[in-house]
Image: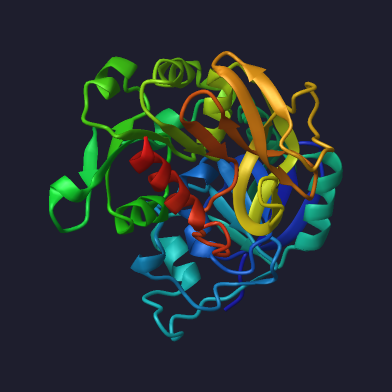
Length: 379
């Protein structure tokens, strides 16, 4: 059956043609790309993709269908999928539904037949920007109006969109007295992060992002966890203030957006990357061990280096003076030399920019969960 024509339109006027292949209608938002070769369902259900149209650089997407096991949250958060060659198989082992059937059921538009190499090269040169996917019956002039009306990602607080309405706890079976009690500020946490903590003996309580420090300090928490999530960290001043009031009281650990929020809380700055880091093949160097990990990443903002720039040229644990004493750089991205991890040396707190839970992605960094929980036990 023939598919209706469709196109991707970026705010700078660049157009990429293809065919509509999922739910009817259009979608607008920030157009980004991810370099993962698999994990398409995990990506679209990752709350960090809220407000974004995801371009997959791998050509065939949908080869193994979808399943409940691959859900990272309760729904799709990305606004659309942009693909070179979409596949709608549900006969693969473990598949419970075809990829395109599932997108249609979820009301998510998608486009296939796009020259995604050309689109990604354009984004790498011009930077991420607003855009949309539209069927051919939508005039380009109307599409441009819809794209321009969409607010830019910089300055957006999307944590309030993805955060839970109320606190809830996840724990494994067993004696509650043996569990470490981790209380997380849920700015868009992924299910695999919670699972990794619970599998290691933690009881995880997820709080709305509007929770106050007084409320958190009144709990039985052994440590506080700052999750991943979407949007601009600079728009989350209320969360940053809460984190400032937690540091030094209990151990605090952050990943991705949580890394950026903790760094802001100690007095550092964040900035928007030209086209972000998204995918499961990003090399990161651990400056303490000199080992290189291949990591999973999904972020469009980063923390400024000690000199105020975007790059860290040294392959050693350079140090900052922060509002909470000295801090050391622990990890650096080998693609663009951006900050990937930080450790506070005078209080028990640390961060990594990447996603150690590998959902999707490689398992090189899973040890970070053990390191965090071991530090909590020691504290």
